Length: 142
Figure 1: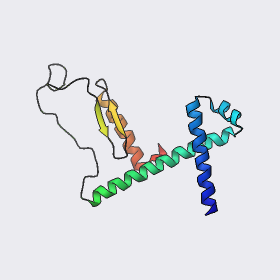
Figure 2: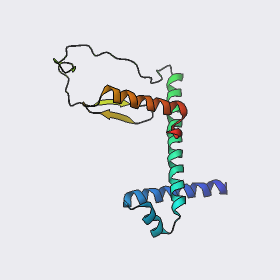
Figure 3: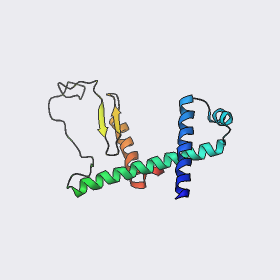
Figure 4: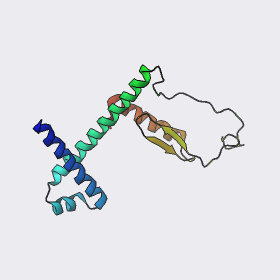
């Protein structure tokens, strides 16, 4: 019990330090020197906190998908869609579609990807492949 409290206190301390350094905008070296903390420890904890956050996020995403599957809902997989309707000549944009409207992809993990009208389909596809690989291998590997 005391050990888990110490670990929780330590995590809270380092989360606070990482956030303070980020808000201060100071270099890690200057921030650590000013506070009398170890620079290697700062970097190690910052990396560890990112890993823990990614792990929690992935776990939460798996829980949401599991709940949807149990409820008979879709797993949130991407499916091909076809835009039906006229197109503005030479643009490939459907008639009546505002061209300044971004493409948005909402992910079950709680984040949304937004692309402007200049984003190429290849860029979107590449990003989706990377995200798919991260999901398969576990978010901590990304």
